[in-house]
Length: 364
Image (cartoon, rainbow, N blue to C red; front, top):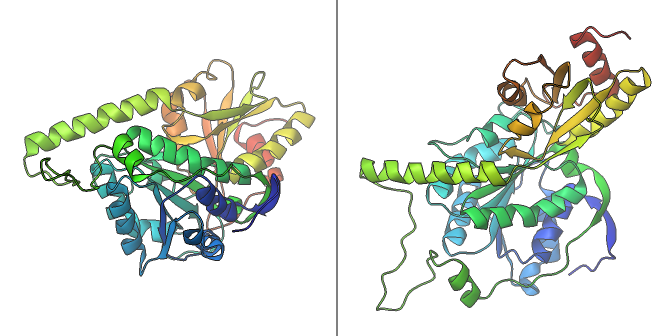
């Protein structure tokens, strides 16, 4: 296994792979698709099954991969998969099954442009798919949006911690820019995988086999009695309410005195930092609000700026998806505008600044 110094230079996709090995992930099941293929390639090159015992398997399809995740998660194992937009679409039935069975796992989506096969260039057009629940039924995914290679590494651990805390699938929703860019990153310290005894203690619901005197655990999302199924759904909703109350994460930059706030996640939040600087050079007080959890969405925190600012501009690599949640949060108190590029085109800071000026009729 490759040994590194404390701080190394690598791609975001590679950081996910190395972090997974180091924090003691039990299994990865995936299928190659650009722009996230380096995750599985790195895991295969590192061969962690010879060192930590981690299983790494290229499945025959995305559907097979997500069902392998279901099997591993049902055993209380820390398991994960990764894909990009069309591949995540194929996994949606399995993701809904995982949510319905209340199984913890980590799903990584490094987004590309669409719809359809689209392009291999970066995009943020899977926001609805992740945040609104792309599969069937009333469920939610804990959704983390990294804006750096460091966060790609950090969110592997955080995502699995949250998944096991709430017995719920978690997703790292990254765009292709963050997956492919190279930055300095401090990888987590090595942590051994949990023993079978520890899994039994921490996950009493898991199907690890039971003594003959005890009834075995059955993992399923199927319930034919609609009254019981409604009770299950009400329990899910109570859990989601608790997550919304306790797990919101966000970052603000120069927002304290801002007259206008740019709301962006992932790579767009980085581009907005330069756009903010351009605006402040012209005497326009601009701040940045970056949601880190796309679900639960930081609605209350965004709304807290409504009494201060003259307007919000969401900046997205899609046709305007997150803007809906910002408008719901603000509830008409101040204008909320949108600017974005589609199909894999990444806007420049100058374009974002020009959009801000045009949307709010500011002096330039």
